[in-house]
Each structure stands twice: as C-alpha cells, then as structure tokens.
Amino acid sequence: MELKLTYEDAFNELREIASEIEDETVSVDVLAEKVKRASLLIAYCQTKLRSTEQEVNKIIKQMETKTSPGEDQNEGK
Amino acid sequence: MENIQHITLSELTHEVRNVMRSAFPDTYWIVAEVSGHKFYANNDRHYFELIEKAEGTNEPIAKVNARAWYEGSQTIHAFEESTGQKFTTGLQVLIKVKVEFHPAHGFALILVDIDQTFTLGNLEKQRLETLHRLVAENPDAIRKVGEEYITRNKELELNIVINHIAIIGSPNSEGYIDFTHTLDNNQFGYKFNIDIYQSSVQGLAAEKELVQKFIDIHVSGKQYDCVVLIRGGGAKTDFLVFETYQLSRAAARFPIPIITGLGHHKDVSIVDMMVNTSVKTPTKAAEFIIAHNRDFEEEILQMQQSIIIRSQQLIAEYLQKINSKQIAIMNQARSLVEGHKEQMQEFKQTVTGTTIKVLNHHQSELKSSISTLKSGAKVIYSQEKNALQNAIANIRVNSGKYLDAKKNKIGHIQSIVKMADPINILNRGFALVSMNGKVITNGEKIKKGDSITVTLKNTEIETEVTSTQKKNGTETNV
Image (tube, rainbow over all chains, first blue to last red; front, side):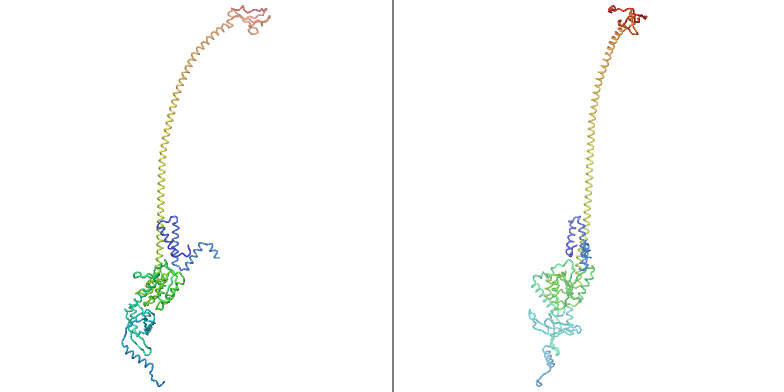
C-alpha cells in the first residue's frame, strides 16, 4: 500500500473500482484483485479515521516491514 | 497671599453642581458610542465613556465619562436580555441621560434608559455598511448573490475527511470544552488531530488578536482540514467583534475552510456569513465534523456493499454464462455425434447394400461362370465320353478284328507248328536222330563208331554208325 495515501486518493480509487465493477468493465480475471484492493482501501480509511496520525504512521511502518522482512531483520540488528 | 479672597475647592465644586443642576434639570436623549466599558458585577455598576466621532473618522469630537448605577444597570440588563446584544464598547446607543456633576468625582452622564429600537437599528445599519464595504473592497473574494454572500472561503470544498483541525478560541471556555468533549466522545471512535490557537473572543480588542491567529495558522504551513472558530456557550452575547470588517475580511479570504460555532442563537454574525460552514454552537460544530466524516465512511461502506453485491452478481452471471456455454457445447456435441451416427448409419447401410449388391453381382457372375463351366464341362465330358465310347467301340471292333487276324495267324502258325511237330513228322515216317540226348540236324557231326539214337513213331533204336556218306539233302524235297 502506498505511503501517505490520502482519503481523497483512497476514495477516488474506491469509486473507480466500484464503478468499474458496476459497469462490468472489470473482467472476472481481475475481479478478485480489485475486490481485495477495495477492501484494503476501506480498511485503511477506517483505521485512519480511528487513529491519530502517529498511530497511522506506526501502522504504515508495520505494513512496510511486513512487506519487506529482509530489511526488517537488518534494521532490527 | 493670605489677603487674597478665596473659597475652598469643595465650595467651588458644590457651586458648580448647583449651577449645573439648575441649568440641566431634565434628562436628555443622546446618541453616542460606548467606549472603555467596564462592568462591576459585585456592585452592579457600569463605568464607561460616551464618545462622538467626526463623520467618517475615528477622531472623537466629544468624549464624556458615563455611569450606570442600580437603575441604569437594570435597564442595561433588560436591554441585553431582549436584544441579545451586550452593552459594551463599540455599541452605538440612543440613551437617556442625566447630567451630573459630583463635587468629588466630577462631570459624568448617568444612564437612565436605553432605546432598544435605535440601538438595534443602528447595529443593523453598521452591519449593512460593513457588508457593503466587504463586497466593495474585496471584489476578488466576496460577492453578493441574492441575499447570500459568496466568499472565497465558502467556495472551498471541505476535505473528504476532516482530521487536522485548528481551533481558534479560549481553551478554558465552555465552548472549547463542549467542542473537544463532543469530538473525543464520538460514537464512531474517530480520532482527530487538534491544534489550539488561543485567543480571546470577547470585546472589540479581540478583532486584532483573532486576525493574528488566522495569520499564524496560515504561516504554520500545516495542512489543516479546517479551522474551527468557537466561542463561549453562555447566554450572554457579544458578537460585535464578529461583525468587524477586518475579521470578516480575513475569514472571507482565508484559504482553509472555516467552521464557526459562535454560540449565538438569535442572529448570524457577518463572520458567520463569510465562512465555509456556520453552525450555532461549538457542540454543533463538532457534530458537523463527525457527521462529515461519517458521511465519508458510510459512502465507502456503501461502495463496499455494492462492490460485494455486484461482484457476486458478476460471478453468478459469469457462472451462468459458462453454464449455458457448457450446455450449448454439450448439445452441440450431442447433435454432432447424432449427426455422425446417422451418417455412419447411412454409410453402413450404403456399404452393406453396396457390398451385398457387389457380392450378389459376383455371386451371380460366379454362378453364371459355374454354369458356363458346368455346361462346358458337360459338353467336353460328353464329347470326350463319345470319343471314348467311339474309341472303345473302335477298340472293340478293331481288337476283334486284330484278334481274329492274330487267331488266324496263330491258327496258321499252329497248323504250321502242328505240321512241324516231330510226332507228326515221325507219323509221316521220318526218324529223329540224336546223340548224347541232343537232336542232330547236321549229319556231318556224326562219325563212324558214334552211338546214335534213332527215334521212330513208336520205337527207339540204339545203333552204331558203320559208315557215313555225304549227300546234298535234295532227295527229301517234296
């Protein structure tokens, strides 16, 4: 997930996904991917709404370290 | 100096008071602006000045101390209650005053009554003037459309979610507490980042301070989602500062959306008219922000819902399509197989039919060949048979003849042989001479002294040769 995703960005992307799915312009092959992305965006927004900026930054950092475990180990030692 | 006639100060001030009393025995309605107002609640007294400025300037052309004691204080209280406007500095008033000269405290006007209509009318006039000036002097940021004022701040779109909030107000005020309490305890658990820009919000002196806070927020460079301007929560109202030109102008031009909750119920201040969003109270401002964020969340949840439903529909439709394709393929395949089957059947029939025909043909050919062969053979057979029979017959005939011929020959030979038989010869008188068991046909071999046997018809004579003579043999010819 992009760093510092704004609500606006997330919302626009969500709306795009929703309309794509609504208009059936999305193929079944990428449907799962799109739905997954949408749920990620929604979860991100909801978390961000309920967290202070600091907490959000912490979460983002966790997300980053999760996606790159190699760097995490290096940093940890 | 002691010779000079004099009176005491108090004698003079008393004299002045007497003169003043006789010169100004009545009360007077005057128009003036309140200035330097102070209220002492413990003894319920107002101390202030009344000033009159030259038209269009700030220069006072008259300035007098004024007081309101118990009676006047009651009047002021009633005025504030019914108009919602605080009696305070900056207020243009039509008041009834009594001229007083106190020997100890000097000259002052004592407030006796206030004309509410004038004050309100005057406020309205001032307000219209301020509004007019705002539009006239800020054509780039403020314009009037119908009864509404469209400002730069009002035209700003609120961010989709409000999170960073700059509050201008007093952190100890009820309004601030109401606002933060409502925000912090929102039922959805939303969190906010709040910076407080502390400022007094009462009295005309607050104008400069408030404008400064807007400047501070702007230069902070922080990306606030909105600026919340809140004030008090009490019943007392004093929003003259929110009617001032500079503050209204700053609010109208401000590049971050402003939300006001100024805690007044009766009227809308000019600042309220200039800002992006105006609500009645700080609590309502907080509720507005929460609802704004909730709208966002509901919208994304709505999208989530529709994405889920639509996805499921899409998948169902897709499966349906696959299914119908499958059925179509199956049917197609089945009918193809059927078609081939029929064709095969036809082929089979054709092949069998043709084969039978060919076989029949061959059979009949064979039959005819056989019959041809048969008849041919018969013919040959009968021919051969005939030939054979002929041959046999011939053989029979010929062999008979042959045998007869041979018989004849044999008979002849037999007769010859019979004639030649020695017996017969002997019968006819001839004898057979033999020597040593052998028939002698040639007499030359017989020598004198040989013992020879002479055989006659019924007698055999043993003799000895006494002589031999040669002969030609012709004497025996017949």
